[in-house]
Image (cartoon, rainbow, N blue to C red; front, side):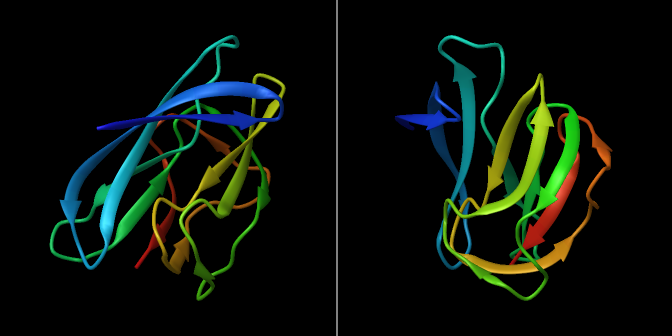
Length: 122
């Protein structure tokens, strides 16, 4: 596992990246705990069994304020896919690896819970 510090909207988060399996490229699942504020950083789930797909999930409950990517769009690891509003903060949910957006599973204005699938990547 590797630890990183990221800053989102001026708030620093400690992120631990753990390799959970392999597809054509390393797959990482960022997990975060805030240093100062009680909010979490973006998180992605592990690849779907046998499909080689990566599900991008919410790590906090909130409301979708923007869908930043579209189906068929190529994204790089760290690119914003969905922007959530949680605890009066906008939290980008990012691509965990390079790939292509296969599906967007939420719409702007939708309420989501921790662990809900927001998008799927190949």
